[in-house]
Length: 290
Image (tube, rainbow, N blue to C red; front, side, top):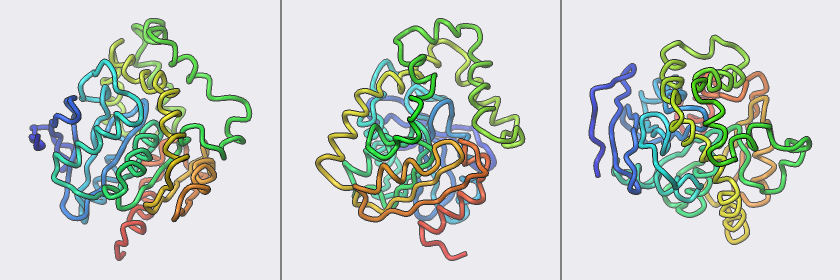
């Protein structure tokens, strides 16, 4: 199904509806030129990419879906593992009539973006992965020396965290937004409000937590892919001050072409804290003259 424009526009970025892999997804698009697909994480929506998309839309066709269950996309009951979400991403490209795109992903968007590149390398011209681990691939031992972050286990218990947090969804999500940046100025109020509004009920939180509940399945999927194939598309890792260089170390044994960038002055949410540096990295990967 083709992208169907809506009336909502954010600084020249239009939101549309598309049925992808059986789920209705909200997709933000702008610009013309070579395509770039942006994949957000938790607790985010497509709006976290807005500063980067606004700049790149001058030369590129930029596409940013709300992942299944999140933002204004359908609150799906299941399908939050990496392979299912990668199929969503592929369907978004199909709906936009795009054969091949650069894919830029962060946080929980990294496993499905990696999976898309591994399963369908012809659909990905360049892969840029920021601030996330790629399953349980070796290389992240330093990052995990004290165990995974506490919220991984809290979110993973089916039905528990969303009930505990009932009535306090906005405060909980805002904790992660504030912790994800080094400066409160990284968030403009419209973006913060859009993200908080999208998680402001129990079912919306449930969908966000499903990405954590699907981690064992996702980790098995990624391990199988890494055992049986190499990452043949060019890949760039972008580390902030949280995950840092761990993603590069994980991918180094299986990537044919790997480049790493570190932005140690950035917090976790790189697109909001260091949009100009991220734009430069993306443009370099795209071969832009500037």
